[in-house]
Image (cartoon, rainbow, N blue to C red; front, side, top):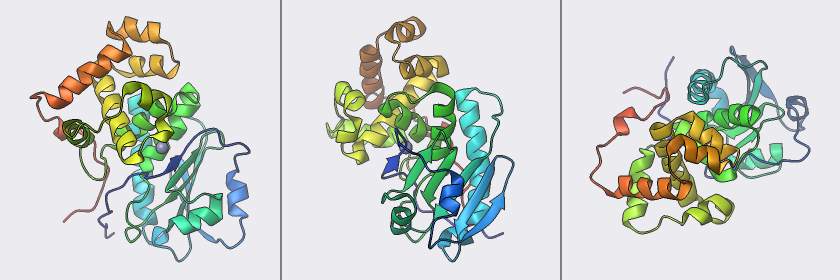
Length: 266
Ligand SMILES: [Zn+2]
């Protein structure tokens, strides 16, 4: 099978939370004006829109989804999950608008175990399968959680930000004094420019995870500051300051440790 280079992947816009009346996969399959090619893997049913670039890339998407599932499960340290995840892939945001009513790159409906996403190489940045799969598994394991943490963990799981190491991106923002205050990030995530909010949260969450493990993330998810302090021996504010020092200081490049999903080979 020929594997294509995918453009840097990211959810420029990703909807993951508090969607009232979440559609089921059957609702989406019944949607007028769509026909689907179906692929099945161990954990997914994949529906790619007929005639779209996503359909041409269905095999690659299926591979990436299975990799993503294992990656997310390892990070969350959870056993195999029951239940199939249904993934709908279309070729562009215009089709997402028609399918889910929102012009976004990725959408994870955790209660329904449904993902809808743009997948292709012609449309520019497209959704990252690992990002959306992490949302599904994390929310079904921990509950909704704070938006910034949910997105940060999903970015970390995705491994790259626009094809670059997420710490490198955050380091550049730090050098340009463009990182936002912790309070802004954690309380008004959706009000922050997404091109800063997502990599900032992704870098900070990666730092927390790699310094203190999943238990610290889980404590923050529960908004349990006492548990976080017990696990890390510091406050969230102190951890954030430490992360900023890590970003700006002479630190070893850890990019080699960043996870990369299967992509094309030259
Ligand atoms: Zn997201």
